[in-house]
Image (cartoon, rainbow over all chains, first blue to last red; front, side, top):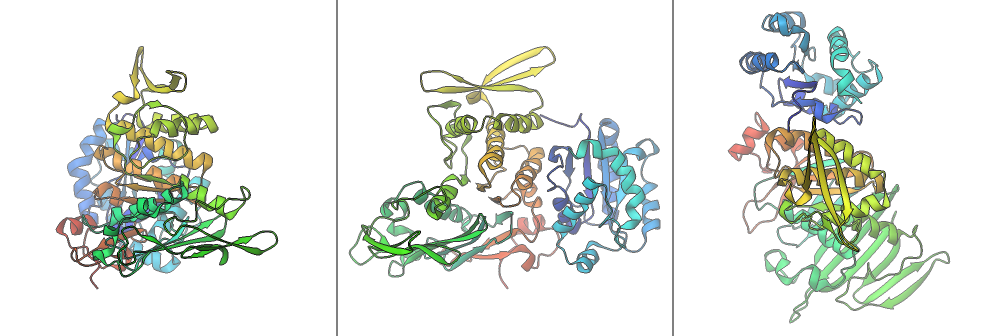
Length: 161
Length: 371
């Protein structure tokens, strides 16, 4: 039985560190685990884009209740990378596609705050559930706030109970 | 919540320590034959003791000694944090020459380091509250003392420990033996799921509100479910029927006619409800991904991990990439063994240098505990 005709979020991420952050995010008690699906890590931001173009654009068009989150490392090239990725998103789908990532890479965030990737994910989920920016406001993450607000307004009603 | 499990000289486990302190969930991975299911077997031995099985010969056999080394005691130690107190149960078994059945060498239960009882050979020393005097008595060497000692109240550490282990959920389910007919009630599920209906009935009988919890989970995984009935089918028996509805069409299905995967959904729903209503519990699920479609594995495992947080604890084994990906480096244990002649080793994935993608490395057979 499939839930793909109900609102749901698919997450396409760059690497294993981001996967572990996503694991922690999904442990939040109020999160509907059936409304989110984390896909296997692509293995690089360019591969995220490649996989998005090859596989997911068609599926997004087919399933209007699907939202897609692309998680990449910005490697200190935030604006440039976001623009490069946005160029690949068809205009008709841009409202349902979101881009988030750490300004450098997840290992830097882990080293700076001394938490495991899973615990980082849990803290980010708590922020989202409580409408706070405690960790999202960190220097390595705060560039995401506008996109996070756009994502929250689109997915929070069905993602968090 | 288990803090530590120590096993020595039992099958492939020699000087084996599983340290899961402060880990609400943990994954055990490794090739076939490395000892993942043996860890489950050890927990089942301790659980059987707490469920009243006390004859050593029915718990372990001489062939269970590692490499047949019967001149060295077999040892089991379990440390668990229950109601903020550290319980430690120790049991050592030996097989003297010319004996056919193992017997107890020593046995002990402590709480926060204080002895509840200790035993050497046949001699048991029991600390009696409130006078703090000790009572001594003798027990047959071939009987484990833990299930024999009379508890004084529900707050007695003996009761707390035995009940917790007895109710621990240890699963390696075989959906075909999970039937919808029950003849009685139980809060002690069997590993293969063969008393699933009794467990389901027992849960709903003691905690009727669990119905809503089960119903909520099932609606997520089977959106067309209408409700389920556990209706009397005889004087003492009940039969589980699942009703589906899609627009104006309705259909009743006997539990026995559900698919293997759908029966596992029911099992998962009861696991989650049990933890909610009489937990926090420990759940050890051997390959929870079996029988599930690939698109459901991740959701299934994540929902278990999400529910078993705080003082509850989840341990699973898996070979399934989707299940493995739902755990992280600090809660994934790699079990490894060089040959059948050598013991199991265990290391956390975060302490192992895995090149590239973990699943690719597992497929290549390159994930090992070699330093």
